[in-house]
Image (cartoon, rainbow, N blue to C red; front, side, top):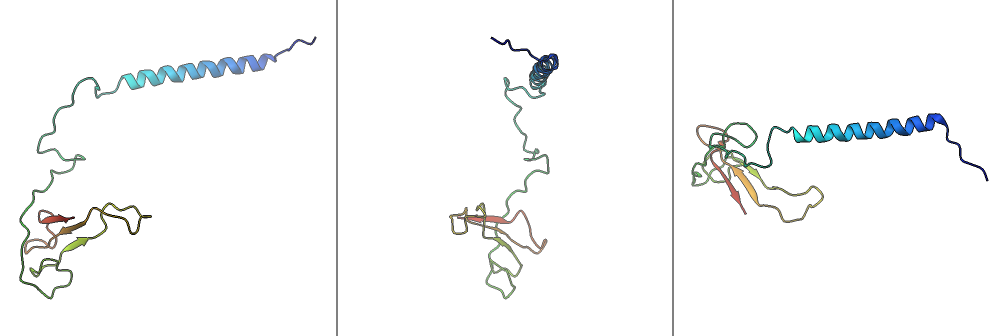
Length: 123
């Protein structure tokens, strides 16, 4: 019966791979344990001045102006100022005829061509 003889280089490679895997696992455990946020404690509540992504605070809503009708192109509410109407909200590109969230409208005012405070979502 023949005995199996392993090459000395193969033993070294296997040992080095096992040591490297153990080292990476240990490093991963240390790095995940040293996170600055704590999962055990609740996070501090966001203040009203804080925004979603660190940007400015959201613009508060203003009333939608009502108009009598106009000949201005893209005037959705008839007040004489152009408005931005977004018809495809939250719709997957491959779902051309699917149900979407509705229509989003940002209205134009005398002070601003498009005023983000004067907005509306129609379902």
